[in-house]
Image (cartoon, rainbow, N blue to C red; front, side):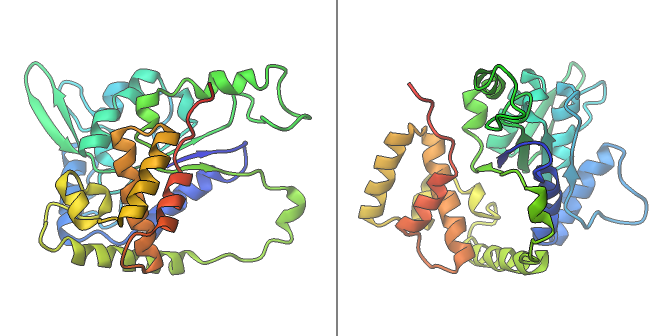
Length: 292
């Protein structure tokens, strides 16, 4: 997911709440996470890691720090966030080479670190959460605060992220500025515990769906023929998706990711099948094609 909004809109706060919405680690998952942290020398004494990892590296980190490396081929941030959240704040400020190095782990769920004396493969199945301002000054659309280069500064700032990297982002969310006058009148929203229960219920449905496929834990890990077998679409809905994919200029990767997101939306809603409304919502989160 990539959140775009002005400074102080709550992007970092939302990202830090996400691990609390995810279901607890299973015993096998806790073992997998603990092994990676143990290799990295970050294993606390006294037992396994029970909480889903949350890693938030600074945008000055190197490629080796992100994906792993060094003399001992140490696991990087993307592996230390395995089965948890990797949060990249101020996303365009990261060196382009660092972000491009994440493309392969985001696709395969693992990262291979090759050095002269060893070759190691670490798991890297993460939920990547990025946050960024709409432009370098952060106030695009606000005549009182926007810089003189708007809207060109926004195009330059957002174009620092490559198309192949953005194609791996399933959810593009605009976070609106919060008016200070509204803070006193805000009513309490849905508590995290209620959302976490809904997520756990959706994950339980997926566990039943993938009972005969132990290598798949959730919808995001479906690939190839299994995607068509386990997420069938009615002919009219498939035609609707094909037309939308053409209009959005979706790649084959983007097309399949929309189906998986739609299946997750349907699971959260308690729906047995994926309908047009679920596909439309999933499409609404995709990045819009550039204007020509």
